[in-house]
Image (cartoon, rainbow, N blue to C red; front, side):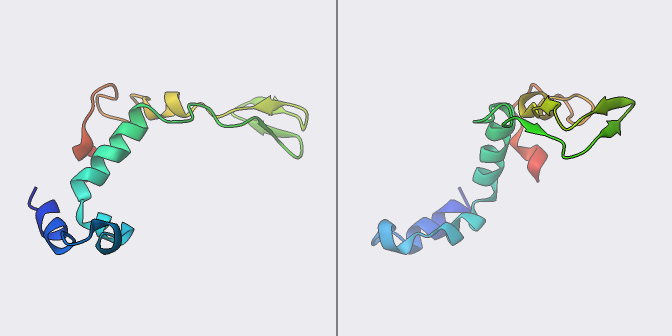
Length: 95
């Protein structure tokens, strides 16, 4: 609340014109909440399908230009190797 009150007070006469996207920088906790919500429930859980432009081997797996793949954002955002307690909603992890 300490972050939000000064910005809202300044823009209180006309929020539509006085409150801008630049003001959101003052709302670091709100930003953290947004990022954590997007991590847990990404609006797009998978990327669109892509393919390689040439033969390539990654971790011993051979991919050809005709091999399609998608990136699973949902799984990446919940990977316990990357996130401490990945199933828990914790906005402070983005501090």
